[in-house]
Each structure stands twice: as structure tokens, then as C-alpha cells.
Image (cartoon, rainbow, N blue to C red):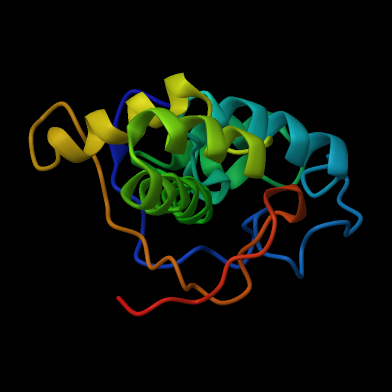
Length: 160
């Protein structure tokens, strides 16, 4: 992400690649293609962060996004945070029921496309340092409508 990064906005933007209505749609730069979604998730599951592309000045290199060159603050992608925090919650639920050793193995078996150890560690680190200058952690609404990535399996809405 760019040098000045702000926490994610409160809801995923209309252009979010994690919005199911966008996935598979034709886009001149392939933002919503299965291959791009796989690439993005591969980074997220290992603990990388993702920018909200309409707020990212690096997007100015793409035709139709030249206006982003003037953007001074890049926000983190709320759609990506929803997916990552859902996976962390799935892991936490399994570990709470089965204990650390068995739960860790069970999570990996039940969610082979879920967060890696590095991704889980990065997510926990963000929670620990939330509110400090080291983190821009935001608690996502895990029940956000229309956000999903099929290889992760379904998300059953839960009480907050």
C-alpha cells in the first residue's frame, strides 16, 4: 500500500472485488477475474494487507483510474478485512471447541484455503496492537451482505 494508509472505510466500496456482484464481471484490467481473486487471496491468507483500489494512487497507471493520482490517503480494503476476520473467527471457534493442537489441525483440514499460520499470526498481531501506531486494525462486520469468496466456503451469519 502507499505511504499514507488509513483504516478501512466502514463498509466495502461498490467496486470491491470481494463483492459477489462484481466477481466474474468483465473489467478492462481483469480486477474481478477468478485469477485475480486467487492472486489477491493468496496474499491475504499469508497476512498481507490489501488497499481499497479506488483510494490507491498506484491505480493511476490503469486507464480509467487516472483520477486516483491525486489521492493522498489510501484506505485498507474493508472487503478483504471481512474475509480475513471471518477466517480468524472460524479458527477461533474450532480452537475453542477442540483445543489448540487438535483445533489447529482441524481448521487446516476443514478450511484448506483459509489463513496460513503466518496469516493467523498477522491477524492476531493486529488485534494485540489495535489502536497503536503499529496497527490500523478495524473490526469488520463479519455479516456484511454480499461479501464472499467461494473457495472459503459459506459464512453463516452470527450475532455480533
